[in-house]
Image 1 (spheres, rainbow, N blue to C red):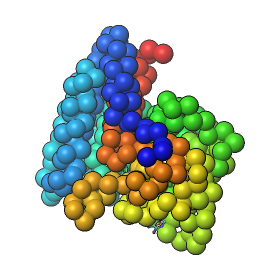
Image 2 (cartoon, helix red, strand yellow):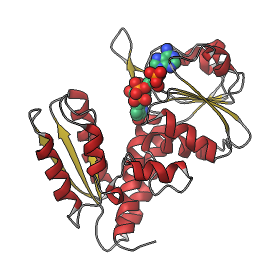
Image 3 (tube, rainbow, N blue to C red):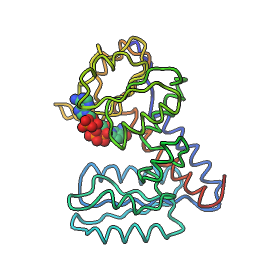
Image 4 (cartoon, rainbow, N blue to C red):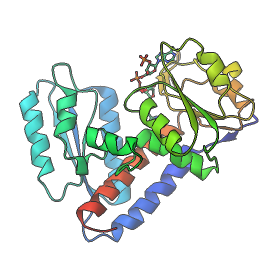
Length: 282
Ligand code: NAP
């Protein structure tokens, strides 16, 4: 392997340590409420890991595990209650919600000052104009990784595969604000291979194992694999064919141990930011 491995696990541990130190200096502990509706096993795992992250960072946390039959009104009432509670700085509603619940309405109901996932249109707007209150967790984690390894997107050709509201679009915005020249590819992009192969920084967030082959990686590129897929053997993998891409890239993220841990750490950072705002600490 020629590429340098970007160690998301180590960076996330460092970031959480910094968050903890800053949280300890606050008059009141940051507080995060996590709401899970239904019994999706993957979501349950995410919620458990968020509780552990809160413990590691010295935060106060609450968990609400609601049945799949929860009504829209019950969920909105819970969010309204959390909005009004002083000890809760961040509210996270685990997505996807079970069918029948209106995700957009629920996300809109969260107080933007407690929207630590950065999904509320107010925060998306702030992000778009380059004045974000919170960093979108996954793309924000990617930017931290680039910074930590001395990769400056300024003047670089950046190609993002995927255009979701959670990853692709905010990723493109952050790279653009960092003065990259950004192309966003999706399922209707005809020349995806050529575009990917032209990238100095290639970020893949599609969700298709094996999509990114060595010929799509420019010699010396930085390759960030956001995806979390299962291969035929049931093992966690990204979009990128890691072994072959690592022969051409200068830097590459592993899956697991890359973007995933950084996403979690950024949620803690955003909760700290919310707590500082709520306590008037700069
Ligand atoms: P998503 O909402 O399903 O979006 C996938 C995107 O990929 C869409 O924009 C889609 O295009 C595009 N796409 C699908 N097939 C394609 C193809 N053959 N060629 C090019 N583009 C294609 O997924 P997401 O929520 O953004 O997540 C993407 C991946 O990242 C998933 O594996 C997810 O598990 C992972 N993820 C990881 C983290 C982390 O912390 N590491 C966080 C979030 C997500 P259209 O828009 O045209 O449909």
